[in-house]
Amino acid sequence: ISTILGIFLSFLLYKTQIPYSNYLKITLLIPLFISPYIMAVAWRDFFYLFFHRTDLISSVAGSIFVMVNIFTPLSMLIIGSALSNINAQLEESAQLIASLPKVVLKIILPLIKPAIISSFVLIFIFSISEFSVPAYFGVQVFTTEIFTQFSAFYNHSLAVLQSLFLVLICIFLLFTEAKYLAGAPFLSVGAKGTKNKTFQLKRKNTAFGFIIFYLVITVVFPLTVLFIQSFKNGTDKFIEAFSLLLPTFVSSFELAIWAAFFTIIIGFSSAYFSVNHPKNKFTPVFNWFLLILFAIPSIIFGISLIKFYNRPGLEFIYSSASIIVIAFVGKFSFISAKIIENSLRQLPKSLDEIAQIEGISLSKRLFKITIPLILPALFAAFMISFIFNLGELAISIMLYPPGMEIMPVKVYTLMANAPQALTSSMTLIVFLISLFIISVFYLIFKKFIRANNSITKY
Image 1 (cartoon, helix red, strand yellow):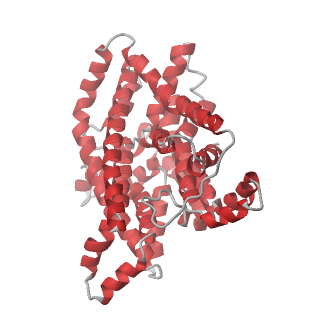
Image 2 (image 1 turned 180 degrees about the vertical axis):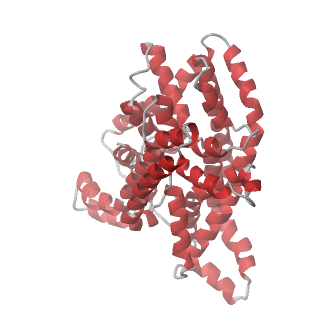
Image 3 (image 1 turned 90 degrees about the vertical axis):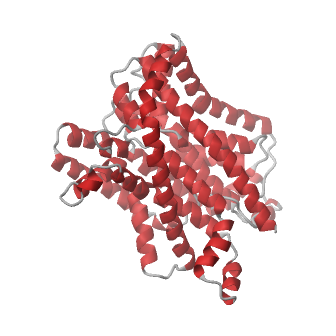
């Protein structure tokens, strides 16, 4: 469902002249960059507020509905990036002899087939690995069962066997669709030298109305309900929620920042060797390593790190926040590498070749030519990694050391027995913090894009 919706939304926003398309793209991405349990709480509040019952949403169908809201923006992002990189001459030539529906079916869809398959596979892996949504709704799936066996019943052997089965599913998908995932666009930042062909729609207002309706249903409506639930009996619960979460802010931000910093270092290294040294035997091995770590469900990744570091000589990592940073870096370096790699591939190779002829060292070429030209991609990788780190629940709840308070874990552990208004208030605070950070990053990101375009023109 997410992939189908992603195709439709990305075509409207990337290939037609919809009003305010740039703002709509950013707004539609909000569910992707906030923790999944926020959307789960919001929709549960909706059913509680309007129907005075939550059994309708606390089900398999409810979990599917919420995860479609969360992962459709990922599909839109991947497919939209692919649509933006189609050679405009092919579309213009096809339009001379064929109608728009035929151009879409015969030209555009076959060209973006790798992106569609990548979107489907990645969303399947994300969905089968999701922990917080089914756990909050009380739905029994692989991740919740593994977590229960490992953490509640201490049945580590059964948890490991169940984890192995889930990992085999994810690895099988990776191997069968490796050629598509290897070329997945994910996100193209500051595309250079490309011309995006747009089409005229006869019913532009209808398409615009559909996008606004989808935006209201998936973003505005559930989050408005959070506000209503948080403040319907005054501000006491909101103030209480803020005081409960306040001790978690510093530690959560520090973990997210450090992990994002190391993530872009590893992501840049992987991307640089993939673009400039693709025939090196270690390059594909390292890329596959990052892809497998990304595909392994967070709960299982957490169990593997516990088993590895919980031994003599490594307890200084196991008992500290370092293990969480390691987990975040391992989990999200693949996304960082893909974003940076897409940007590196857009740079003319002649720039580096001329610098080599002039006898400029590798370090100077990197810091004076390559890195300044891909600063927007580096910043985007840092921004996305930071936001994902800040909201990651499954890894945090498995690995956080004694005495440390982390924001998603604090919210999740309290909302099991907290009053509805307090749960809504805590979730609303986390959402507002995430939205504020996204807004600040976006404003800085726009300046990076402008500066980068000025350098490119010069």
